[in-house]
Length: 300
Image (cartoon, rainbow, N blue to C red; front, side, top):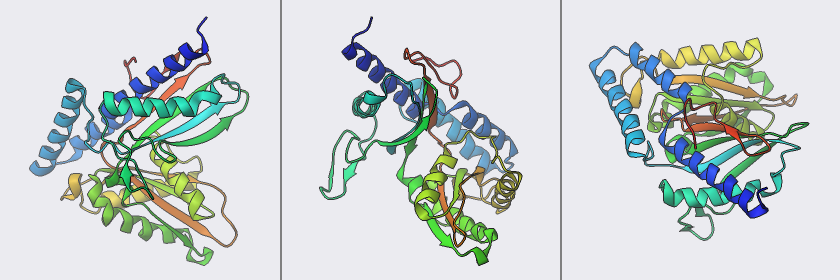
């Protein structure tokens, strides 16, 4: 039987390797979507850009190096079963795995504490890595979604609270302004995450969770799914393509996550991801066996 230290080391080592995999290799759904989009572009410039994208992604795997130099801030979104036996050490393990991966992958050190104004050098700092918890009753499993939040895809983030009299249609120009302005700097085609809530706080969290949703999924409400489609079609009709240059497709997709709203508010937040949507999922059983549904054929 493994002792406590052996379990902690096993858990940490697996997560360190998972961080390395997610930094180097895009998930299956993203690679598939980019291949589809490449086939729909018809200008020599757009074809050349997509060729360079796929060359970069192949070289990252061949050389075992991150596919983007800005490996961002690490964010972990956890669905934790109440009976998962290692809840108490999970935050510690994620922090140590982040520290180790910064050296072993390597990841670019990006974490700067606000009031020290000094890069910590290992991507661990005040509330970094960021850990978001969601409790799952009557489960002994843990699902961890890792997202690399780079500066290019973080700078376009915006949030605003509208009056109900503005109507939900008011969010459409707000989203378009975010994508067509600062969003161009995030290396299109983008994945646009929209959060609809009752205040800026929960709308912002929902917009990031929209970004980590698997491509091809839809909002569960028919009207939400239809709004996703309308905004996707509208953005892709702007004449903007990869790298913000002339093309047919500005976005890989638009995802909306929502909560109930206050009677007097419509809160909307927008986050985007660049074409290197570095988001991966790993699921642990209580014995720390694992599966990675976003990476076919991969093992740690």
